[in-house]
Image 1 (tube, helix red, strand yellow):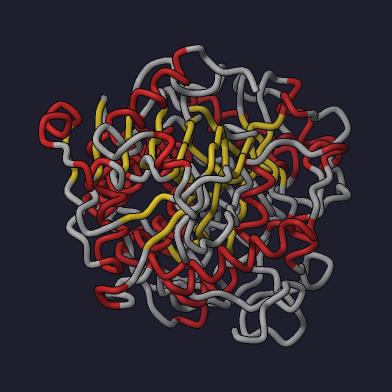
Image 2: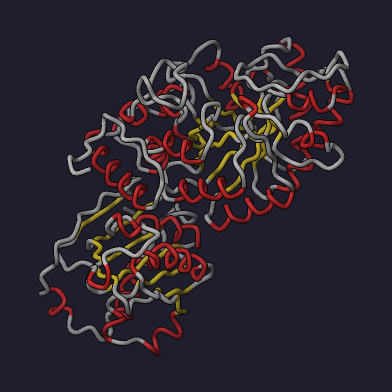
Amino acid sequence: MPRRRTVLGIVVASLVVLAAAAGTTAAIAGLRPPEVTMPQIVPQPVSLTTRDRAPFELVGESRIIVDGAGAEAVGEQLASAFRSSTGFELPVIARSAATTDATTDAARHDIALTVAPGSAPIGHEQEGYALSTGAHGAALTGDTAEGLFRGIQTLRQLFPPSIESSERVGGFGARWLAASVDIEDYPRFAYRGAMLDVARHFFDVTDVKRYIDDIALLKTNHLHLHLTDDQGWRIEIDGWPKLTEVGGTSSVNDERGGFYTKADYAELVAYAQRKFITIVPEIDLPGHTNAALASYPELTCSGQAPALYTGIEVGFSTVCINSEETYRFVSDVVRQVAAMTPGPYLHLGGDESLSTPEADFVRFIERVTADAALTGKTIIGWHEMGAAKNLPPGTIGQYWSFTRPQEGAEEDTLTFVQNGGQVILSPADVVYLDMVYETGSPFGQAWAEGPTSVRESYGWKPTRIIDGVDEDQILGIEAPIWTETMHRMQDVEYMAFPRLASVMEIAWSPMAEHDQHDFEAFAPRAVAFSERLEAAGITVHRAPDLPWTPAQ
């Protein structure tokens, strides 16, 4: 695995500092390792080598030693994750201060987090990292704080699952051991996304923050928020107050409405940034717009406001394509949402516009994407948007048909590549997290060719979906969850886990031979990760195709 020459020096230097007064290396090597769980990491790292040496032990005197831009904030997040379960103080200390204060006992039980140029695998400076653990300490290095953050998700998985608990575990006699390993790691795809539909059922700021925490564990780096649909409008727009006053009041089954103020949205964006997750907002157009039409009848061609909609059918709504008021509305919304969003992407939907004649649809899409591109954002659209051939250069297509493309989906998707863009893959039959695991599930639907097992969600090949879209044309993979049947965040988690783990492993881990991953090797790691989620209080579906142990 090619690495910068400086990596070894940085890791060794970190470990020397940690073990400075811990005795001779021979004495350390002679220690008999306590019983320790072997690593079961999801997503699977690029390179993981287990060492025949004593494990790393986190103790009451352990510290988190940080160095480099952004390392302190990452260190605080790691400390926060471990403090409740261990009861340890885990102070976060700058290396310059720690070197002076180092004690024999503390040094060999410290975790060193270092941001330094040249420490990530070559060509993967943004998110790559290197991790080494053992009796000498734990050292994690990266070129960026983002790489460091991805690395702490791996470090967490070296400890027992109970370390994720929000309550003290095991009393003062508990031992927190991590296997001795050397890891080098970086992502396969730049875009690894999860989509949360907050339009069919509304999820408040606290719920969305919880989902951000959930998906960050799997090195997910984008959260696509589906903010508008027939059943509800969820984002405040200046000059158009009825969008939330009227359109924000409904939901599927009329159970609860709600919306995000601009301050709420800013809070979500900032929270996601701390987890190195980019928010991707979606305003779905020209279909899926009944909530907007009910709020402003001038957006309809008849001038009559439809009733608020609380069902789950699709394809019946459309804005008036020939009205200049429609384009004034779209421009206002798009520019405000773009201004509120620091990330590079803006999603404009374009799916299931079944009530819009094709020529009108093409004309609408070409006009609104050209206008939206003036905000400086890269436009994303569902693959149907590819029916419009004159898209802004670089527009991203999100493919949501099946692993065998249906009804022109392949042709539409190729439009984006031909215009210099890339593709996000979300084949519904394997990565839609709202598809039922098995018949009889209390949540989800089965329209994407029936139930989707964990095995099926892991067994597909990204490079084999669309002819003409290979590795270089794939920006990444996204796992959407549509919430027609989900009322609480616990329902969302039940459907998301453990299948999101399989999808994110495909998105992060190296391309396997023939792009075919090994489910039998993945399955026990998926169980181990699920145990970790359960320890953290995250709801998990005990899918029947995973090897749960009888004790569970």
